[in-house]
Image 1 (spheres, rainbow, N blue to C red):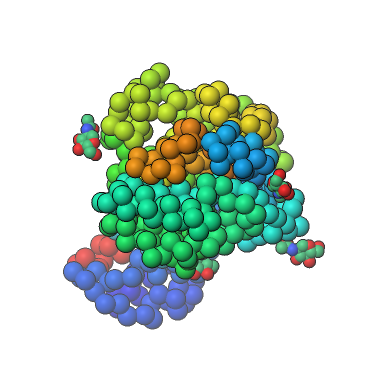
Image 2 (cartoon, rainbow, N blue to C red):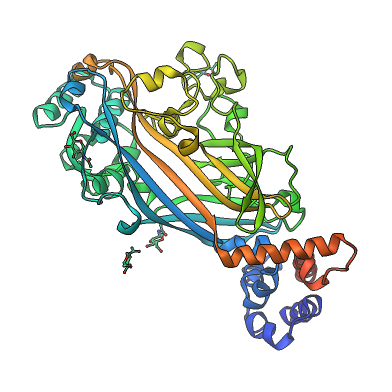
Amino acid sequence: MKAYLVATLLGFLLGLNFIDFASSVGSKTYETNNGFPINFLNDLVNSDVVQRKISSRWRWEVWDVVPGTHAYQLYVFNITNPDEVEKGGKPSLQQVGPYYFKEYRYKFDVSMNLDLSVNFVRNYTYTFDPNDSKGSANDMVNVINVPFVIFSTLAAKYGSDTTKINQVVSALVASGESLVKKNVKVQDFLFEGMDVSKYQKYLNLMGPSTWVTDEFRDGRYGVLKLKNGVHEGSYTVDSGLKSEKGVGKILTYNELPSLTYWNGDKCNAIMGSDGSVFPPHLKTSDKLTMFEVDFCRSIDFEYAEEVQYKSVMGSKYHVGKDVLQDPSINPDNQCFCSKNNSIDACLKEGVLDVSPCQFGSPFVMSYAHFLDASPEYQQGVVGLKPDPKIHETYVTVELVTGAVLAFHKRYQWNIWIKPIAGIDYFSKFKSTIVPILWNDDIFKLDADKEELLMEELARQAGGMGGGAPQPSQSHAHIHIAMLIITALYLFRN
Ligand SMILES: *[C@@H]1O[C@H](CO)[C@@H](O)[C@H](O)[C@H]1NC(C)=O
Ligand SMILES: *[C@@H]1O[C@H](CO)[C@@H](O)[C@H](O)[C@H]1NC(C)=O
Ligand SMILES: *[C@@H]1O[C@H](CO)[C@@H](O)[C@H](O)[C@H]1NC(C)=O
Ligand SMILES: *[C@@H]1O[C@H](CO)[C@@H](O)[C@H](O)[C@H]1NC(C)=O
């Protein structure tokens, strides 16, 4: 009965055909919890009629379906002097690629909470596209033997018996493992995984670290294997229904309101959106803040310049200079040092030790080719040529709607090679941050969404110019909020 009543009210508010709506909502019975019907709100928001209605709002249109094309271009660093590196020499790197992967993004298990925030789980999948790649996924490269380095580092960190671990690493070396792995297929290095079955029998040395067990599952380890088709994380974000300034703001990540990786609240704060949506009516003095999963932190982008994106005027934002600033210059960054805020344990400008969020694996993130990093990192290897034109990271947004028009996120994945206490094999290596690959994560708004955006801009301009906007379109979000409040009111009683 009550569901019908709400449906009528709803129909009235949204100017909908009642039959239409009742057929999707009114005919269903709901279990109740504390007088409130479970799943009713979800069904409401997900029902076709409501979806059609709210989709007239730009940000609701982009909410569920990604409004453009994502590509993940990967460049791999091929080590051309593996034998020298094995003896402790400086790595000579040759960039190969791009290997082009089509990226599909899904939001799973979307549901709405009573405070109008939205929960979802993210899932990305990557499929190789030979047409847009330079080279084949079967290309052979010499790469840092990432699973070997991870295994040795974590065994030394978590294992109890150092002598035993040293013996195990020696046995692995005798069986053919080494710092550089020669002739690895690019696709195995990235997503498919290299054979690590010989490590299985030693995994108990890791103590309680089940992470390595996960990473080495199926006897294969790929640097990006667990990024593909796996739950990336669960989010609760502000829907913007209460205040549009909040739209997209991440409220919790994996059920927690802040991170636990870093040495301080400032560094652990989850700020901004996931980068797919920003609040409308932005000013160039506003920073754009987004949470970057690969960096395990939030990153600020600052306005740089106006750019034309197809028919839309966009604003280009660069990564803020202070984001990866040397902690001895920018004390705000000290809490990102994994070693208890002591300055000599911190890395310098332009790199971020992400081992705290990789269970101690020595991963370091930077911009492509160590762009904007301390020169000592570029000089630790041979073959890098940082160039802002091809390596910079930026986001282009349309300020009135907050719509993302395009972005290039160019992030480099590095492994920190250094002596590992108690393990003889690693004693000959100089402490060096060695690049293994960089990604150019690309987004371009689709042409049909560009049209929709132009309509939205025209409508907003019309509204501001005095012409009354169509209430059913411009205030759809208010209607949705009202109907939810109405529903709450009715069912609470
Ligand atoms: C990687 O470097 C090795 C050694 O120089 C070379 O034989 C191989 O062809 C390179 N791989 C690619 C994909 O260029
Ligand atoms: C590559 O191009 C061919 C011919 O144009 C096309 O049939 C094929 O679907 C393309 N492959 C991908 C993965 O896009
Ligand atoms: C992620 O999406 C892909 C493609 O739809 C699917 O095959 C895979 O099972 C999904 N993964 C999870 C953990 O839901
Ligand atoms: C340093 O790290 C240890 C162990 O992780 C912790 O117990 C201690 O509180 C930290 N000290 C500071 C000043 O953060």
